[in-house]
Length: 496
Image (cartoon, rainbow, N blue to C red; front, side, top):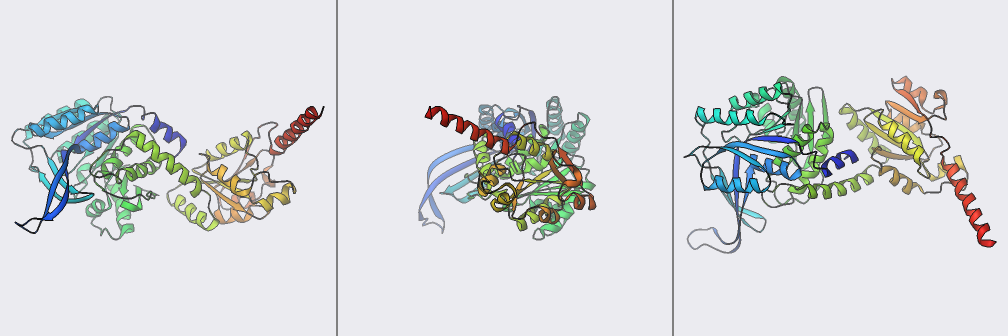
């Protein structure tokens, strides 16, 4: 779930953190055209070029994503001291990125030329040199990188296996960043992850993680289990594994958290990994829990796969996508019991504590809001059991509820403090409590603990009961009486 606090952080530009990016920089070139006939010289289509474009790629695209989202970015890497480097630096500077590229004459700036017709890529032509650079050039790159570390909120190593992110570069940057307590995020392309030992996090895709662990990519559970073991052996805080249309899984040595992808029409997956890396780097730089960050990264990736070619996400685009995601979450949070049981199991696998409270919530008021906010702070996920309309009538009388069950559920789901809403038709929520087995059971302070339905059961499986003090002189019944009194007074005045 995307919290209102995280959405506000995105809207504010993430507080403009300073984030250096070191890696394999590229210039992505595009030629769009129309296919009208087959060549008489060979069985290939003839493409009549109609538009050309150039964009920063590779590590430079990670930097573009960061800058567009609000970071203060310095880009480090190798280039060729050629016209391609000049054009790349101009594109970066236009977006406020400071390029500190180490030029190596005679070694070309890496370029990828893509030829497209409509949304279909017809051909890609790469110009690159993957050979190791001279030791003096690596020394110059490291000197520039270490100079960029002070005041950094995080650093990204964007390794496209083109030569810039050598084992020595990795180990030196990771060591120096650790000495300054700066988190390091690695976007890897190497078959072995050993050179990234001691980084804060690595964000591989499923194929890359499978190659690094020696597992078959078709056995996702085996790959993820091996990834958890790898996170431990490499002394990482976590691995964020991107699983394509299945979402992102955070692998910690002792836990696993999965954030499902948001369904989108896919035109081009180019650059989606760069966008995920950029969002996770911002999350780390701002001290946001990564479990919240990967849900945001899913939203961002859903935007860029709808574009053609390598293109960064803009903050305004992410804010628009967040608004749509929050609206979907409001619907997704109102769940039948069978789906909620499955969701609770997933939350528990991620090591999260479940809080439960219940009520009629007929006319939502400040007392309800305070109860729900305080309940949410007692764990990781808050479930609200909502009395059905018939249940409310039996408890409150034939004139209640004022607000119907679907409306009450939707209003509760719109609250950032609420993670799930489930209705029950019985007079008490005991059946729900026994099915969900919450870690914390919350009720208002007008109860004593022994009067709380489910208290004995929750204590029996090791949970606890928490009573939240009421807001004085605030209740739905009081609001209704006040409304009736005011209506009667108005009627008297009008009839006088």
